[in-house]
Length: 121
Image 1 (spheres, rainbow, N blue to C red):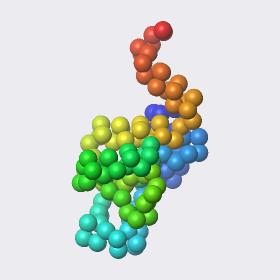
Image 2 (image 1 turned 45 degrees about the vertical axis):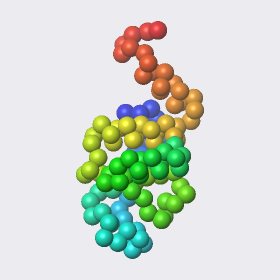
Image 3 (image 1 turned 30 degrees about the vertical axis):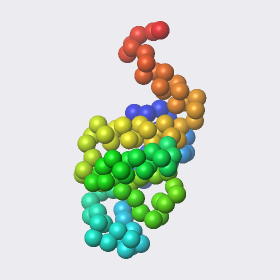
Image 4 (image 1 turned 30 degrees about the horizontal axis):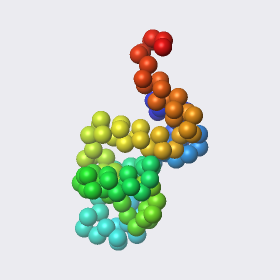
């Protein structure tokens, strides 16, 4: 919610109506596809910049990140919330926000990160 123009509604987070992240319990077809690997804990879905970013996350830490056939070909990742560090989750959500935010809003936000707090440039 600290990211500009982010709204929350029924456990989904959006920037200007574009989905950034959402809580997502596994569905029957997910359990069927995952079998014994199905996760019983809380799960968050998050957008990724593209399929390459998704694949990199899956390869980097399969204990935290996973997907289901429902998301095949879609730039989104599922996250086992109990297994992700807070700083890593913040980075993931920041990247998801940047992937969905309009270009000018994203650039304005990135520019604001380069400025000293309370200062002017």
